[in-house]
Structure formats: C-alpha cells, structure tokens
Length: 128
Image (cartoon, rainbow, N blue to C red):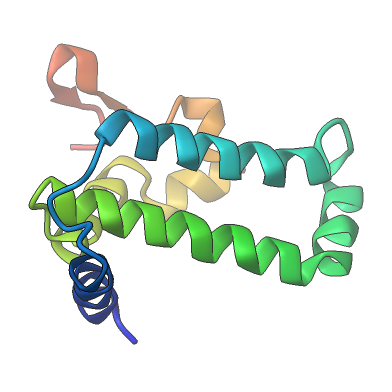
C-alpha cells in the first residue's frame, strides 16, 4: 500500500468510528513523542554497533513503533488537510538540494552540517 492509499484508509478508519471530526493536534503530537520514547528506551546510551544488535533482536517492537508512528503522522495529515505523499516528495527534493551526495560522503554525516549545507536562516543556499 502506498502513502496515498494509507492516508485514505486511515481517513476511512476514523470515519467508520465517528472520529473524523474529533481530533486534537497536541495530543497526537504527544502520542508520537510517547512512541518515540518507547523506541528510544530500547537503544539509549549504547553505541551504534549495540543499537544495530538491539534493533535486530527487537524487530517486532521496532516494526510496531514504525507502524504506530506512521499511523499517527498520516492521521495528522488528514486532520490538517495535508497530502502526506506530496509533503514527503517536497521534503525529499529539499534534502536533495541541501545534502548533495558528494558533500555528504565527504563529511560522513549530515548532522555535522546541521542538516545540510544551506543557510536557511539567511535565505541562501551554499550549494548553489
């Protein structure tokens, strides 16, 4: 199932339960935070190698986290009338500009450049 189909299915799920007009943006964000905290508890305070091992050993729990979080994000998209598929496409296009492969391979990790090589605060893009 693709993102558009998933978003539609979640909309239908909520409508069938009478939840289509009942929502609270803040509570959904808190629920995402809670899900993230549960995943964080699996891997906090361990190095990258140990994280990989823990994730492998807890694949079902990691899968549940991803499913729950995607459900909540798509529910937020429905409630805010955002096309999640388009939002993801737009983000990927922006990331392609901000984090060109040759530069990211050079530095090894995007976090070393605070999310890319642009200067969003000043409205310019250093990669141009």
